Amino acid sequence: STVCYLDAKDKIYFAGRRRAKLTDRFIYLNLNQDYKGLESGIREVDLLHGMCTLFPVSVFRTAGWFDEHVFPHLFADDDLVLRAKGQGYRLLVDLDAVVFNDHTRKGLNPYDRRLGVTEVIELVTSRKSVFQISTRTRFLWRHRRSVITFIITWVADYSRLSGIILLRWILSPGMYSKVEKQYLKIRSA
Image 1 (cartoon, rainbow, N blue to C red):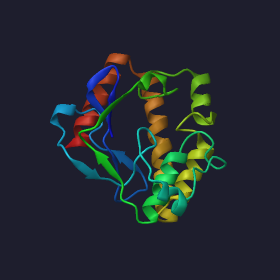
Image 2 (spheres, rainbow, N blue to C red):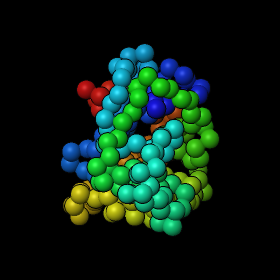
Image 3 (tube, rainbow, N blue to C red):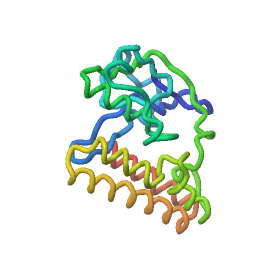
Image 4 (tube, helix red, strand yellow):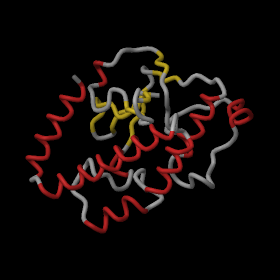
């Protein structure tokens, strides 16, 4: 399904992800755009997440189960979806079916606010964090297209994360918002 924010029901959080052409990064489609501007129907994508995803039983028979040993908290859903895609399953998002997500309960997120030093350490070490170095590295390695794309993606991900954290520490919140808006405008052009 399409996912919108619980506290901003007209803003899209998830409408599928596409794999970048030059890296192994998956880009969220329509992130933070207005839902009313989204087309309708079914969209085929490169990656889903586990939130509000329906899996036919045959997926588990052919692609296997969630790999909770390698991905004990995060990435197990992405991993299963990519293995299913590798087995020939199509990944589809119903753009007309909408659920709401309380993103404030997702844990530490450097995109939402300034983090303290202890929180930054937790961000890269906690298994509940999408930025945890060891789990994210295992995921990127398992689903790499090449060693080069793995290296580019890993370096780009952690450089971007470091840049966001440093900018939030250096810039005032108002100035950071202006820089972020400029970046999003350039990225969407």
